[in-house]
Image (cartoon, rainbow, N blue to C red; front, top):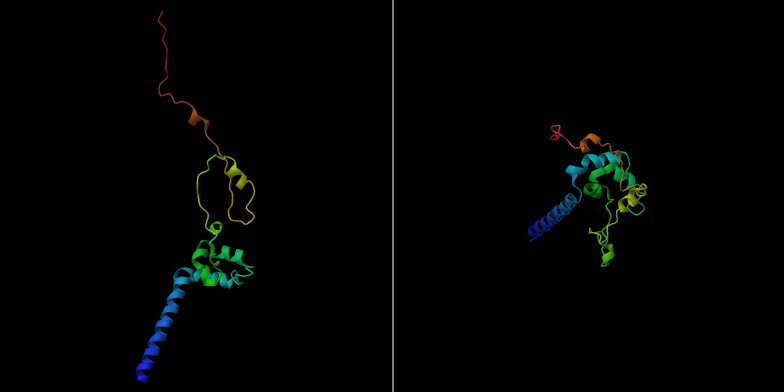
Amino acid sequence: MTCRSALITAFTIGILLLATRTDYSEACNEAICASVVSKCMLTQSCKCDLVTCTCCKECFSCLSYLYDECCSCVDLCPKPNITDNPLSKKSHVEDFSEPVPGLFQALTAEPDPHERWLTFTYPVDFDMSLFAPKQEKEIKYHMPI
């Protein structure tokens, strides 16, 4: 019986190790994140804790577009906010009942203090000949005498 109980114990430990390894690999996708996380760890861009988060901005910049995928590799993923308050849910999109044409200009007139977006203004140069009527043939009017 001792051999059998040792075998069951070893099997149970193996299953537990496999389960914890699976959870870890699902949390941090090493195939995608390995190189960028290594770079960020070498530059110490992600070397802080989530409580003080003194390096979160640098880490976000370092991980770039892979931040959502790789933040778990550096333990800087935001914790989910689990509440029953409907105001804490994600934002949603809907149409305004009254049009507000100046809203976009009001939001983009000054830089975002949290640097969530950048605003670029490009000059517009229209060639006025594009708006002139095109005449394939010159029209001649003849008046009878």
